[in-house]
Length: 106
Length: 106
Length: 106
Length: 106
Image (cartoon, rainbow over all chains, first blue to last red; front, top):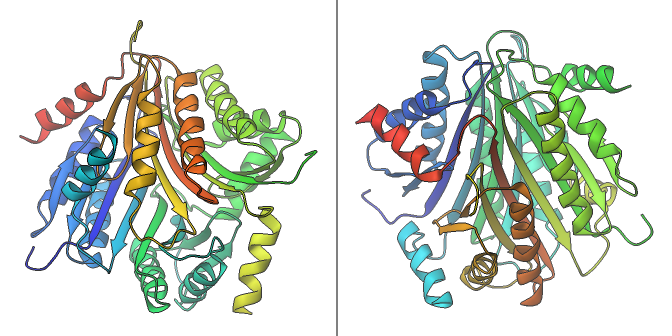
């Protein structure tokens, strides 16, 4: 990122209509595609791929290529859940958010 | 829409850091902005704004202008939750989805 | 409901690992199960089942039986997305929320 | 946990109607409350509190006390977003999910 991070997001991709209860292949494809976008900080978690950016458009691009990666792998229906946290008054780093909460509970 | 609907989505916008427990003003601004996009079918529900489109890009544009509408109204932090249902094997109309379920329970 | 509605929620159930791209059967089972809870106002929408209640516990019970209904139909993996809006300062009716927004945009 | 983990979930709590754009205090209260439940594996992430359990009821209890913690701190409106991933065919550990994806992309 060239500028301050102001947008955090998480994206979960679910393939529908595959006979496999595992989704690792589709999640890996989406994660790999998202990592190909420059200037994003990308973290894989058990429930979602989390992203930090300095602009909203890169988050929207991540959603686009996550859907496209699933479709490229042959999935006929994709349902995604996305949460976007955009902040104007100060930087919105993912690391600082976790530290702020942990400081209040330790 | 000029082509078959294949993408349904719902968008919820939440302003953070306003002293008002009501969010009607920000939701109205987002809903109004989304309705300005051509070729979308837009429905307001109690929990979200639901959208039907023939392409994913218009859904991403709806997310963009929903965030922008909240920021334009002076909100300093916006958290949105989005679900996108994209389907390749057949049209994905919102009306048909509800009818299909109701036919199975009545 | 015997008391004022204070909690609104929406629940989406997704079966994973079925070979069918349609989810109507599982959504119908969940919707039917949720409707069996007394004192809930339940509305089916294209993206979710929306619920109005006077207490949080009935919403949690709706989540429980929605998962159980999908498992009873033989699904081996269920992913649900839930949003809960609980409000203490005034009644939180779903109808009023929509009317409030529409009054601001018309 | 005494039995195999089969349910993973993530919970995000958002206070509405506070004049502060930061939510650290309310998230910390919810995280602390969830950690008080026995036999849960709880991880704080930048976008949510993630939970692993051997049963669905403990996840629902986590939602209940997260809402209650926010209300106890004086917040008049709480909106939460929850995703639950319940799996019957094999254990559903959060660590294994991440490793499975990383093995496919490295």
